[in-house]
Picture (cartoon, rainbow, N blue to C red):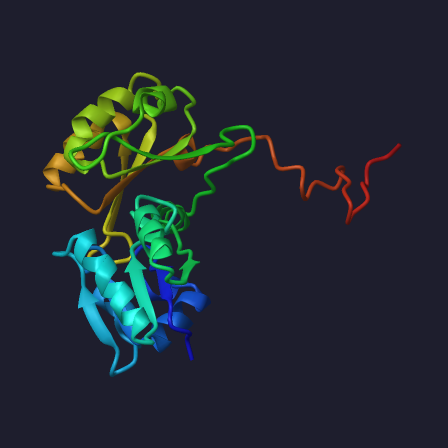
Length: 259
């Protein structure tokens, strides 16, 4: 049985089988579940208690959501605040935690699988291939709801030519493509990932120079993530990780290299 508290849970990209075991246990026991219905598919809630109170929040403001959660907990109920993806990425969790702390409401965070992880797995790709790329950047482009600090402007991040997961950019895809092309070669592979984990999921890999054109053809304006990486080219790279190399020794294994 859950203690009266707010459990802020990351639902992952949308596939119920990608919920963490901890998230699943909490969801199945909660008295009340407030969920972002525009971003979390209904199948995530398929095994919740028959008497759980389900509250969609797609049409609510934070000023409506926070008092609701506080009232439920003070009435000795366990509350799940269910977000899509992982809580560390564009989840608006920070302000909710602050408000709940000011009201002395206990809060527990439960992370979820990120969309970039789900996409890489479905593409059969490691995003940090030795000798090719060793950095992953998770970012977005400035839009109507939020601006990006100047130091994190997309073109400056593109200069690293790292594996880059670009969120919340479908409405600004032409601008995003132009900034990426300042540093990535035009033939750099881009995975256009629409509604990952949902029943109508689609993933298309195209050259960077076609990213905007394909997005417009498919009429993608939301729930789309772009994964830009040289690793998606599946090129054969001679370098390999040293971790399992027989000539490399570490705390748990001695090297087989001859002296």
